[in-house]
Length: 115
Ligand SMILES: [Zn+2]
Image 1 (cartoon, rainbow, N blue to C red):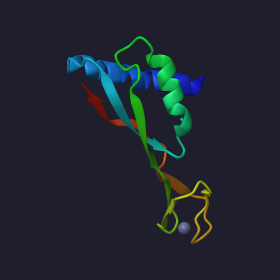
Image 2: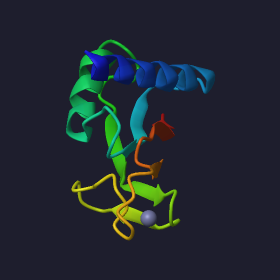
Image 3: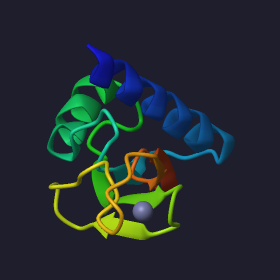
């Protein structure tokens, strides 16, 4: 499962940082997840719970900041952010399909709270 390996990478980073800081316990992990990333935010906690058993991150809560998709048109320079998930990948101003995804594919840890 793809999501599982992504969350496994996140757990690795969390544990590595926790160890570096001599943490007893990881309390919270703050993630930034783009609407286009492979992780479904609702599942992140479930996967994390599964993977973090018997580690110091067991029981940590996952807080997710969602990043909406922003595209930029290469033809006219128009930029558009889709707050809802009804994004389209053609320019709303000139209908060009030559667009660039500026934001929305992110998946990274913004901070880790430890004890
Ligand atoms: Zn355009």
